Image (cartoon, rainbow, N blue to C red):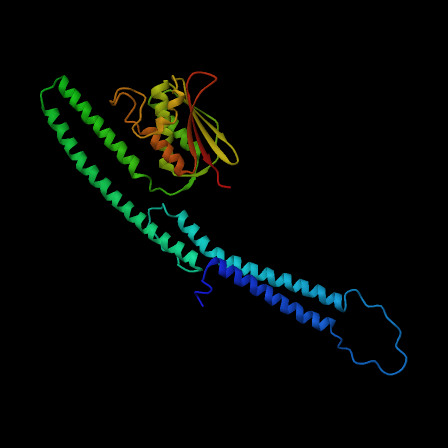
Length: 341
């Protein structure tokens, strides 16, 4: 029987529809037979009784109306049951996919339903198990790399410091410091975030960042307000700080403004720098790409700040774009964070 009618979404939907149609027709036939059939006793002998007008809601017309209503009712029930049964496995699959990046031990979804949904659930369970194993392996790899690379860098730094002071020593120490910064930035970029979303007071967060920078003597100003928003607190702080540091480094001053709307929050950071060539506005988001020709710690970091900032924006289901300002000199970094509907 399975070979003739496999357990698929099509066969289930077709079978339920056919069963509903057949049942509704049988019920209609019975109702029409009851209301249209002549079940009255034979008239008594003598002259016929006076004719009385039949009510509109009696006899054949009533039977026809009831049969149509019954058909509609049965089809509606069959449609509701069929849709519910067919949608449940898809809903379970969607719910499991939404929690796939939570860095938690994955929970297998039930492999139930028609053949297509069972296959999808089985493939999804295998996929999330492999992804979890790869993430665990990546964490172990990053921890090992961090330890194995920091140790020789520390030894090199100590040995250089023990040598006689000179220009070469200073250059070696600069190289060691640059390697350490590159290592830290690369590991942070690869490690990702293990935070969970929570309601965050964006205005207070930005105000705290600006206050700290102003205390350090950095020329930063802030405008606008914003309502709380679901966010990753540490990640968002890092994203905004990176953008402000870039604006100060290349544009001498930084201005951050908040533009709150019903469907999204826009965080705009502007500077008075030379801007970026139009052809490089997207290239600067690539890891380790920098416009500066030199590669030392005094030329703007190791080229991961914007990459990390855009990745953080994507973790918030938002976007980060760079634009050259048309009204005056400088660059505009626009961070868009959507509000949940």
